[in-house]
Length: 251
Length: 347
Image (cartoon, rainbow over all chains, first blue to last red; front, side, top):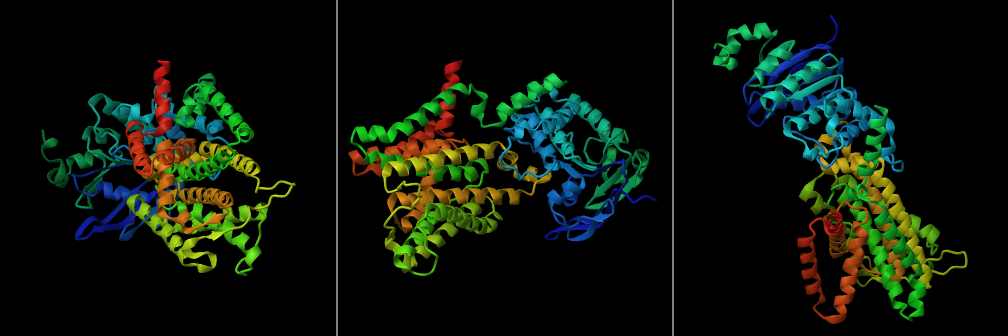
């Protein structure tokens, strides 16, 4: 069997008396889209912070492409190919859309300890950025400051910045957060396309979206994975329905 | 596709700079050239009018403009509110003073020199080292802690020099003469010194301009905007902030070296937190994160100080009131205000 792209082994994170991540283990295979669902406070965002490096774990290991990255800082993990998007939009508001994305492209294209040549004259940065901006459907607003975008567009930009780092694994933290019906559909479609190119770990509350996108679902409750399986298996899992999905699916 | 790209990238070039780049660049260029010409002719005019005192006064403004602009690199572009810039400004002044005093008094702690070609680069290097040390520790913190820790470091250096009797203690020390530059020129001549300071300011501003628009500048502005996200897209933000801090420190050191020459005197007052506060005021008044913000702020504050102190003993009260008023009407600094007025005029 191939080594999984991401292998999480018995991960633990405690905040004082609270164990936010409790002996959590999880595999994500190359090319797979794994969705993590779970009630509020299940530790989904904490898990993403541990994976991305924003938070160090108290116990356990994170293996990325077979390499232990548990103690690497955020920026080193990004260069290994691990990118994250945020639940609360985190963009560069006074930069234009294109500059937002170009800044992320710049991060993977050689050193930025260059003090003389104007960055705006680097054609390949802008070209790569423009391709990504077009890819997520923001080309019509490429020249606008990010602060002027609608919420849905800002969510798209959030994703574009993560993609622009050239990741092998995308960690998406509730990409549909706060979106309307139309916007959600567009985002689902976009992620569906990205799925062809990237391995994705998706945290999401929108069940319709999860069921449409996921190859596999992991259910997180109190920092533990209580079940993993295909969409069908999770839908029919009695324990999961009791613990989390509740009546939503029995209708 | 290619043509869209060309138009987009050319627009991006314009907007990649500070906001002023978006508007017609002709007016600032003409104004800049006019101002430079005026500055070049200034000593001759002052001499003709027999008002040579003003040559020294304008030199002082140019020196503070350099110091404030160096602070603007970290405070304005990098979003690091350092309350300890006097450590490098005053520190630079002291290093030139110490090197010079060794020649006449032979204290023997340092090899003495009065050559500007040796002393000034040495000063910049020493201030860069000092900034690397102070920055390496301070930059582990953010926000209010960063303000306080930079202030604490600057005060440490202040008290160090207050207690160093060898270098004049709290009374400061006279340096005797200005640095020497050779080529048959003497910096003791106020006009010559003025031109040297002007040249250094112009060159420094050109370097800052390149810096702000470079890859590095892009990263620094990104960090000001959203440091967490910069890490999340792969930048080791600490390293970039530290390099920026070091660059700013070394240019503040250069400004300090010039100030020591201007006054032929150094004192701990140059290292005092008031000095750091004054530089912050200049940056805020001129325009935080605007290339020329430090220059405009230095000009306005020092001019106001000069004019008000002619008329009243209580000039500090009036200066404070005026600054308060200016900050209220121009929260984005005078450059921001000019932008707004200019834009309104075009509509």
